[in-house]
Amino acid sequence: MTEPVTGSEAARPLGHVSLVGAGPGDAELLTLKAARLLAEADVVVFDALVSSDVLALVSPRAELIDVGKRPGQSIAQDLINVLLVRLASEGRRVVRLKGGDPFVFGRGGEEAVALAAAGIACDIVPGITSAVAAPAVAGIPVTHRSLAAMFTVVTGHRQHGEKPVNWAALAQAGGTIVVLMGVAERGVIAAALMAGGMPGDTPVAAIRRATTDEQVVGRCRVDQLADLAVESPATLVIGAVAALNVCEVVASAAYAVG
Ligand code: SAH
Image (cartoon, rainbow, N blue to C red):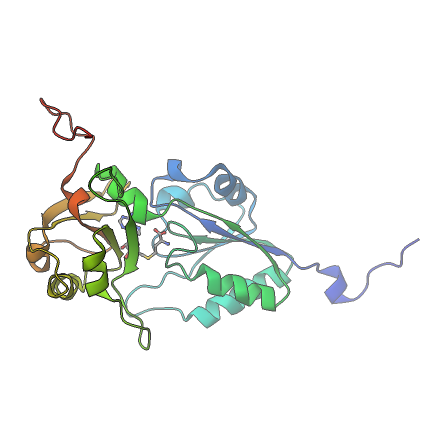
């Protein structure tokens, strides 16, 4: 017979954290695994970009903790890491819910490392990233035969001390450039791309709150991007494909594939 467990450590087995991608907003774009984990969670720690439709799928008995990083009231990443470790150490099933995909500018990697260092089991549930979904719902394929054979996903928001983005190299590469967190710096980004040789008439699309009821799509040329009326959170798409709307019904086959 086994001894009865008396120590508080033993009585509280280590819990588990799932780092879950919430997709771009539309709850139907969640993975089946994400939906199941939300229904089974004891506690859900979520970011600012997670939509209310997705949060509606969380079990009503689960605790919801908002750690959204919004201007002026940001919660330090270190504190989020400590929180996740503490919640899991209490033996709870923790879902760490992040907009889009947890490993695309979501700092999911840092959280996974912190959990591993604390001996907490963690699994990763990928999500649909806005980097691909936001262009898609505007009818923009990020690759398109004869127009773009590659796409680059880049941040427009440089953290202090980080290596600067080589916009000139991206301008020269010739593929589609998808900029996340780039709204505030859009004029600077456009100027850097043009300084690197990108023609001023290169098409740009800006998709705000893609896949939600508040979705807005704006289009312009890169030399007009500084003046484009667009608010965060939006995804910027720069390159020939940004002129497309492949779902638009047209009289002639305007986008016929050659
Ligand atoms: N991990 C997320 C990205 C986090 S960075 C993902 O994979 O989608 C946050 C940036 O993502 C925002 O500033 C914006 O550029 C973009 N973004 C997130 N949700 C979006 C949405 N619904 N529509 C358009 N852009 C979005």
